Image (cartoon, rainbow, N blue to C red):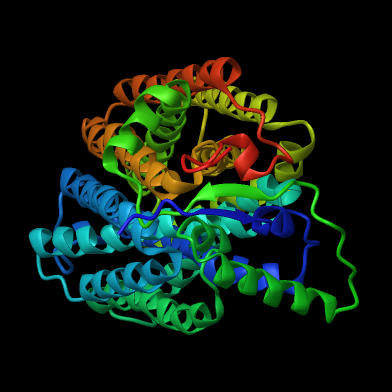
Length: 477
């Protein structure tokens, strides 16, 4: 039932003026673990690529290895769209649990796959859970973090993807060592890591509140104010003092949902240029990342003769470089600004990949120097990719934030990400370097296009409240 009651709330201003605290850190851990889980899953798929071709496991081909990565991404697309809309409709907190349970089911079932089709289907279910997590988690985190720190916090959280990747790389190396675990069982045990971690996170999320901004939007301003009051009480108990909110109270028309026609109008007309920008940033980084990371194991084994069981060890420093990039560069997104840093990181990533592709096709790299080149590229590109999620989560109105994240993640992944593993799997299967060289050049060009799009269409959202960056659709005069 829709109500036209107008409410006035100081919730956004009270949230944005809060100092960083242990409460914020707890929320970051409880919610941001999504990126750790995704990093873990992608590392498992990438590191197991060579092992799953062994007849003692599933006996997959190179193309089938790429196809299973694609089914995971397609599941993430479906999960993002369906569960992203549900997040805006039903609230952030309810979806915390649903998406995590779906993920747990999919990753646990992956351990029991018996052929290509069963494995691909279970990876699809896992992807649904992860895709839904992105929409629910990113929207909630942005709505709970202070405006002046939002950029660096978002990028740091997104970098945790690579802590999951690093952890997965180390665990896989041990599990795939036949001295400890038989080959036919080690890859199955690997999927138990994510399931175990997910169960722990389920308990932590009990203590994360519903987004006060979402409660305010639904006319539950009393509950919203109470949640913020509890946060303020916790911060004051540490001896910190709180300043008065800088932003004036926000006036909204409370309603139970946002009509689909209004959502379409906002994204296709009122914020058309922002929609174009979100699509380009997400598609470019998705293709760039998935083209390289999902097929890294195949490159190392085919072109450099790296043993399949040792691939995860090679990917460990690669993952660490990805994790450190956003942490080191993140503060610059709040100080220098979004447009400058996003355009810079996208452009530089493309240039570095083009240079690496030339060294690769000329045969001047070995396994170690190839890894060093990848680490340098993704120290920069990790920030670029993270900034794409930051962008789509803060440049659209409150009512459609989770859906916007879902749509652009889904479109970018479908157009850019899901095609990349199949394309590059086929290029690698030729065994020649020249086709792969042109694939890398194409990825570099896409990143250059994204850099130009940001310079032209980017939004200066640094240190601004979410409501100032994009006014709520239900805002009243």
